[in-house]
Length: 130
Image (cartoon, rainbow, N blue to C red; front, side, top):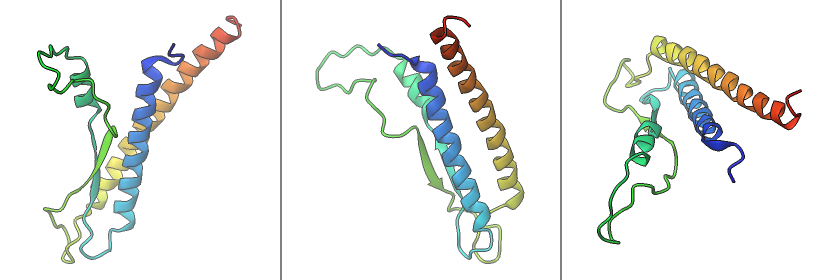
């Protein structure tokens, strides 16, 4: 029996993504003057994973790869190596990074509000509705 259901797991994965995104943006901002530093970003693969999990595939042979394979991580850190904004080879755009940081913080706070609501509902059920 799954006590917390899929919503809590999805929120947990989303919080992991938001944390990784915050670390990548913070690293970019802290290395804004580092020569040849290339900005990092976090690619979110959950949309693709969720879409592939909803597809029912008919396997006609045991050697066919099933669609419901376990994925190692819900996100991937990538380096943007093909651009350069500064004369020293650095490609960190401070305005863009600050906007990404603010957007990620709003996303993180919304996730925290949602997960607090879910746990509040569970707490209400455990207490018998009181």
